[in-house]
Image (cartoon, rainbow, N blue to C red):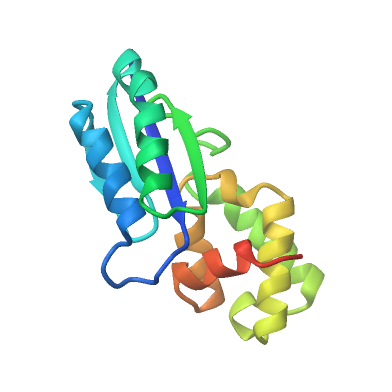
Amino acid sequence: MELEAEFTSEPFRGESEPPAHAVEAMRAAGHAGLSTEFGPLGTTAKGDADALLDALPAIVRAALDGGATRLTLRIQQPGDNAGASSEPGSVLDRMVAEVEAELGSALAELDRAGKQRAVRLLEERGAFQLRKSVATVAESLGVTRFTVYNYLNREH
């Protein structure tokens, strides 16, 4: 059986050069024989379930030794879109529409505080458990993914 681990280490530094903690975590996954895909805000590692599970302590240690203050990890079987319906985006689209109705405006038209509130409401409803939701929400808000992650990491 194959597994996929998606991990995000913080602090973020925008879309410039990746921080050492992210690079070191990706290297640890590669050293374990896992295939990796590095993104601006997260890394995906795929491979045999036993290899991936055995590599997790080294990945976590590498991120922390590299300066990470927080590490978020999600593990799933490849292709498993937990929480997604058969129609791509429909669950998230419905959540966004509900928040827009609740706030009385399209997300892109909200001021900064309104956008932060929208992100908190979407988080409370589980929107960010859906695959690629941050990119979709960022587009709806008219901001970058980095901004959405900053809103998610703010104290409530």
